[in-house]
Every structure is written in C-alpha cells, then in structure tokens.
Image (cartoon, rainbow, N blue to C red; front, top):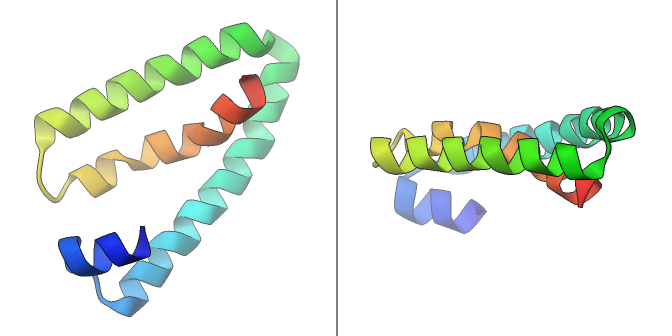
Length: 87
C-alpha cells in the first residue's frame, strides 16, 4: 500500500507513514473490539454484519471515485479484523 499511495495517489513519505500507522492502529483496535462482538453475537452473525458493512463501504467508494476513495476505505479497514475473527 505504501508504494501505491506514494506513486499513484501522490502522498509524500511522511503522509504514507502516517496512513500506514493509522491503518495498523485501526486494525489492532478493530481486532480487539470485533473479538468481543464475536463472543457476544457468534461468528456467523458477526461475519454477516462485517460483510454488509464492506458492501456499503465499497459501494460508496465506487460511487464517489477519485481521491475520496482513500477516506471511504477507512471503515472497511476497521472491519477487516472482524472478518478474520468471525470467519
């Protein structure tokens, strides 16, 4: 992802590192929070919710197009650990 946002999106090195730091931090927090959700709701229901959020997020990203897609992808990144924990 670092090479993509540097070459294609035009981020400088500092912005790329910040984006990666935020993404990793969101994944850690997401993994912890989705673990609690899986314990309460069960894996099937959690996975259904996660995939529905992905569907909406990527649908919005496709509708927006261009630069804001990076911002629209944040909710999807937060839900990635939910897919791993629930599946």
